[in-house]
Structure formats: C-alpha cells, structure tokens
Length: 192
Image 1: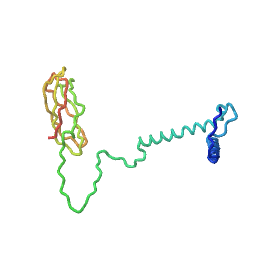
Image 2: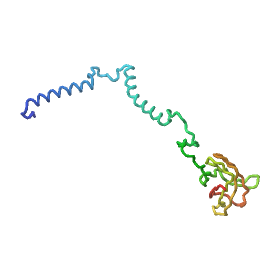
Image 3: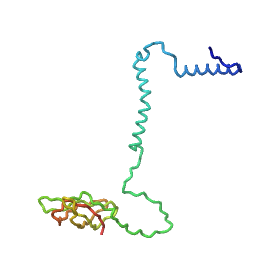
C-alpha cells in the first residue's frame, strides 16, 4: 500500500515542491559535488592536504595566542611597584594637618628562618626579622617558646632586635639559655 498526500489544497503541494527544490540546491551548495573518484580522500595532493590541515589548525593557534596574551599580560605598559601607592587627588583649597606617624603592628614585622644552632660555638638561636612596612623600626621584641626533643614546653624567652630598615631585614643571634631545648616556636614580634 502506498501512502499519498491527502487531497487538499493543490497550491500548498506546489509550494512544498518549490521549497523541496530549494532545499536540494542548498544541500548541494553546502556539500559540493559528489566526487567521481572512489579514492578521492587518498588521492589528494599535498597542497590540498596542507590546506585542510591549515583550516583545522587556525582556530587552535588563535586560541593558544589569546591564552598566552592573557596569561603574560603583554600589553601592560606600566609596571606597578608593589610598594608604591597611587597618588590621591588633592584639593589645594584648605591646608591639611600633618598626619600622625603610622603605628607598626605585630603583623608588619615577621620572623623568618628561626632555628636553634648547636655548633662549635655556644648554642644559640639564630634567625631573621623582616620589616614589611615603609617605616624604619628602631627596636623590636621577639617572644618565643622553647620545647625539648619530645615536644614538651620548657619555657619562654624574649629577644631584642634593633634598626630594622623599611622593607629590610636584620639577622640576629641570641645565646640559648635552656641547653636541652630542641625546638623554637615564635609567639609574636612587637615593635618597642
């Protein structure tokens, strides 16, 4: 049994045939002519193969270039100094009072590379204090805990460090008062 279109409007069937012919033409335009050679994929010239490879590689190259440009920040003209603060817009209408000296808190000073040394000299605590501010620190006090080999707390002690430049660091060496101490834990660093 053959299915046929229902008898209806002959104008709609003519319109449908017109759209079908347009669809066939569009498909032929997109797909191109059918190749007559059964080995058309393997019989391509090297120029044809290079052209297809280039068309496939161009989007990948563009994507890689955009990622590299974004990651390396190539077009940034001015390099910012991390310690430089941008200039604020000033209004010269009224003179301002001088600002008070900034107070340096405990977070602005840090102790790095602290350890107990037991070498040919007398046992000592050595380390470095780093100043992360724009102001010079005349004197700072380091508080620390001392523990033995088993981790038991032996006691606490303090040490003083002087003349730490802005964004600078100072090495220190302090005699160890508890000879059986193996570990040192910094409690805090405070400017005096």
